[in-house]
Length: 171
Image 1 (cartoon, helix red, strand yellow):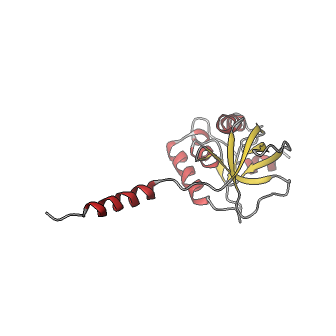
Image 2 (cartoon, helix red, strand yellow):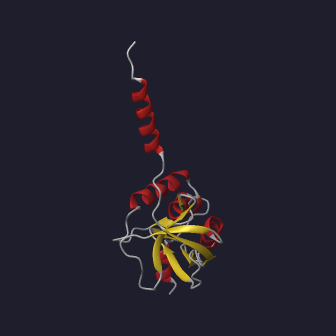
Image 3 (tube, rainbow, N blue to C red):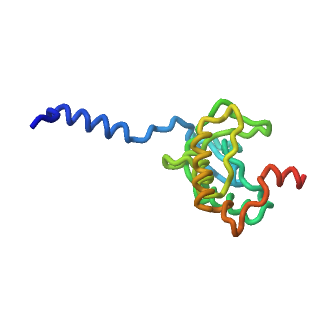
């Protein structure tokens, strides 16, 4: 019976296992001091710099805090995921918005929190070019949540207006 030589099997196994390992995220370590909304947090640098900065999560649009119950539910879920924890910020093409907030993907224990919020039905995905690195992942997460009728996609208590529509109507 012919097969792989022992060394060949070991190399094949090593290559296969190595390709299954998650890619380490190159990000800036920070501590989340406070969650402001379902898409915005206040952070301090992990290096001891005590200057607080505001960070808006890229690729998502959380219901406004006044959109009950979903605004507060999104904020609470983000608090559960990141508040008081050390996380990594991953930046995309633009690192700040017009409100002097940093724009970043929030990684906690190797999980993209932006994506998790979408997948659980707490927020919508929203691509804002040029920051579209994870647009496909976020779109797929939305479709999974929608098909499973999670959170804002639950037909018994759906989100009736997008956050943008709500803000525009309630200025």
